[in-house]
Amino acid sequence: MNTALATVSTIGPRIDQVFPVRLAVDDALTRDAVAQAITAHPRLRLTDSAVPGEVLLAITTEVTDELLADITDDTAPPVLLVADRLGGRQLLRSLHAGVVSFLPRRSTDLGTITKALVTTAEGRSVLPPSVARLLVDHLRRIDHVLITTTGYGVAGLDAREVEVLRLVAQGAENADIARELRYSEHTIKRILKDLLSRHNLQNRAHAVAYALRIGAI
Image 1 (cartoon, rainbow, N blue to C red):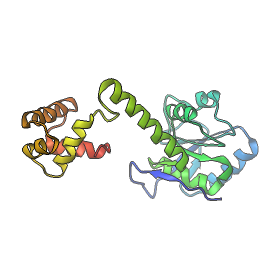
Image 2: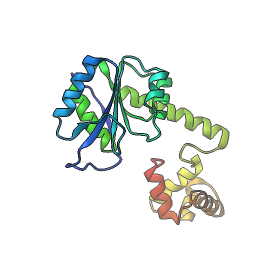
Image 3: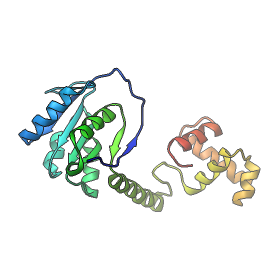
Image 4: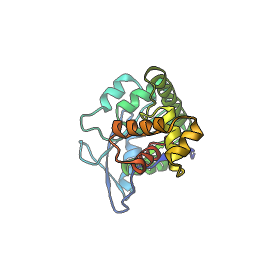
């Protein structure tokens, strides 16, 4: 049964690359079936020990603290977790343990698992919409807390800086921005100077590129 997934891309794939996969599967029957599927896949190979460039595949019915402790590794391989469910608290602990992709076990077949392994190994994340929403909601809560307590969001930009950079990205000059936001031109210059200094940015264009990259504008 196919599962709707959200894939987040970070780097481009290398078509000829073969990725090692290490298993963390307690159930022998499941382990054997997964091992056969991986062995038959042209871009995956099984490994019994930690090696560079590997992906760790963890399959379980319940995400426990013990499981997360077991898959956490100093070498920090990306982890594809297949489990029945993943709540908000478990999601955060899973991310700290190295999980970058998640599949719901009951609605996932072997083909989906091998495809997700390749996607994960290529530097991307595979998440069901429900899990992606959990993550977005959590980031929003963190952002709200940071803004409330420090004045800055997750990206290190406050609301006023975001508005200024949005207008800079549209080609507005300082005088235009000052009129639009009803600040003095001196204030706009100070806002830009402060954020350039705080984030080690070289100029206005660099600041806009940074804001676009982190999704602030």
